[in-house]
Image (cartoon, rainbow, N blue to C red; front, side, top):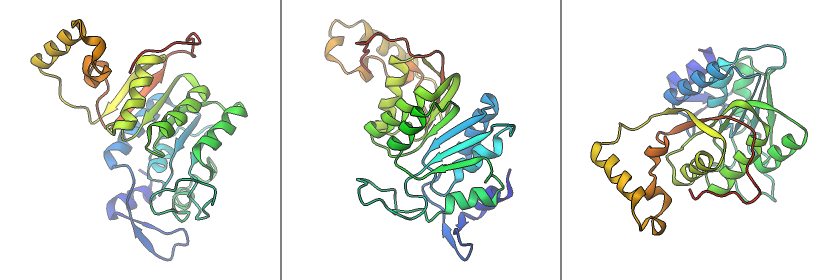
Length: 259
């Protein structure tokens, strides 16, 4: 493990961008989640990876530490509040308004400055511009603004850039808004669950029988999709869920499966 990342995890604090003081670590992924990301990265072996939400750079450090650096290797990090300047026209802000440039400073201290590209813009703008430029990616980590609409827009543009066989991972997938996006991805698009972190135990026999009866019930049209097909029945459990892209989108113009 990179020495900068190891020190941060051990002490629970991170050095400021200037290097003159430290701040307590917060709003970052856990060590176990980081190890999960590293396992994914090593399996996918991406040339270009991307993440939405840099903060103090912990997830990026885990990802970059696992990258097999070669010609063209790049990690794109999108964070509108990394450097401290707040856009007055922006209608949302990260926790604490600014990360004070700590995330990108940590990545540079760790020796990843040459492969990291920081985009300081809201993800819906940055991702749209990347997609419009023809950017392709192999791995993505979504950990930005945690509302359904923002997370879905993040995924929409990432899907258009993600190569077939690539993997996209949602952090905080147990949060209701993020889990709903995950249900859409699983039920409407050509994605399969690749791996999960922190999955629950196997559902009981009673629970499985109950789910089967609900799916056959004549009243199923009055029930919520989550009731008919619970998350566990479609493989959606855990705090982080990784999906693999099976093929490019081939849906007809009015396709819809309730989720």
